[in-house]
Image 1 (cartoon, rainbow, N blue to C red):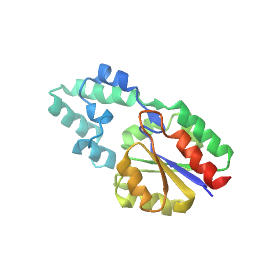
Image 2: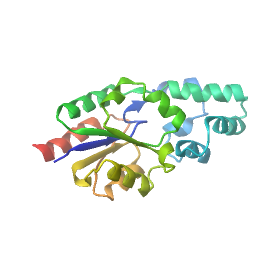
Image 3: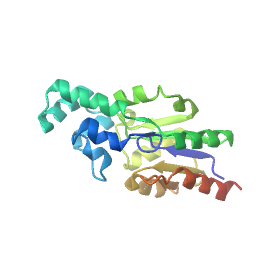
Image 4: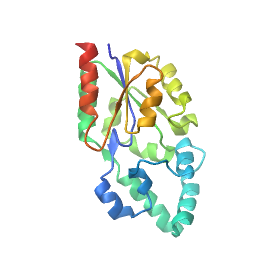
Length: 199
């Protein structure tokens, strides 16, 4: 049976309107919507080894911005994140079925502290976030952390993420995986796995 579903945050539980992203932020955060590696300083921000002030300074240098403009850009990026209704509905359905829901995300402490204010977070049974662990997905250690901390059995667990490198890493543990994409794939794939094993 499927007893647990683990969700990534950005691109799965929380989304950005990429049509607005370019209009609001120009090219500064083009890497967010592209299928490419994040700049090292942003990965370190998620890992909890750089502060927002340090990252803002590096961003200003990279894009020839003033510190004020760079800080405004980071704030706007945060504000563009909003809950994805289809995933919120999925989470409610899973909870009604008695399935536990967890978070596994690459996220800085500053961003995470703001995002947990959304009501959707009331439905989660636990979370492992990169800034706390000092490890980013797809490092094996972060998957080991969530499995051991909450005593999750991989064969009873689904992991949903929008980056294939992260779902591939999870599948190496025997976890069922779903890769969300820009065409809306994701929630129905999770439902299909639940139906297959819980019918």
